[in-house]
Length: 178
Image (cartoon, rainbow, N blue to C red; front, side, top):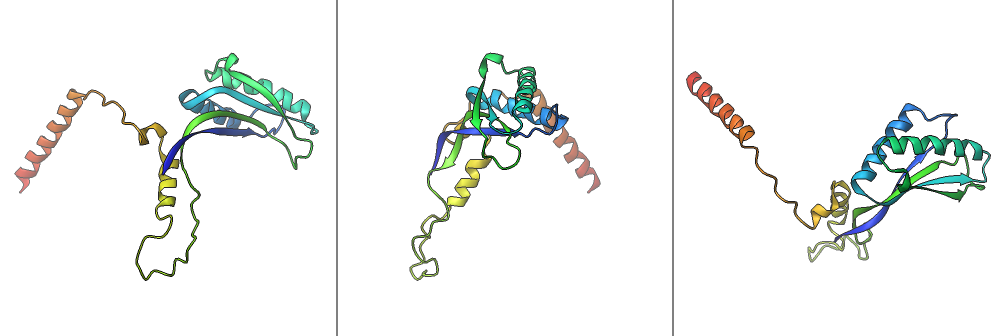
């Protein structure tokens, strides 16, 4: 079965120089849009400590805060924390994260406690459909849609009638040619 859970959405900013590049700014603006639409709680900025790039990380965080506030996230909703990066291999990223509601399958797919080749009774195998349910849960835009319907919006009568008129004209044209 599909269930709703709070999960952590993350985006890693790898420090490539003294400033954020266009790609970083664009990706963070999109990430901020997802936060504004689905986010719960605070936007967290996790800063690596203990690596040889501490000063660069502190400089990067200032730029990240500016991008996030320009994207419409109030400064009071942005909080910084630190994490130990002393044993990190390579360049540790500055990590942005927030909580959001997500749909997930309640069990682990791909478990087969019995031999699948033993099909003499022609029954469904143990977790048939699990991968399908998992993909459905991952693809849905708003997880609440799986559990409660949205209110129906009002019909655009003018648009609808213009389309019907187009169909009628096409039908008249088709009738003349045959």
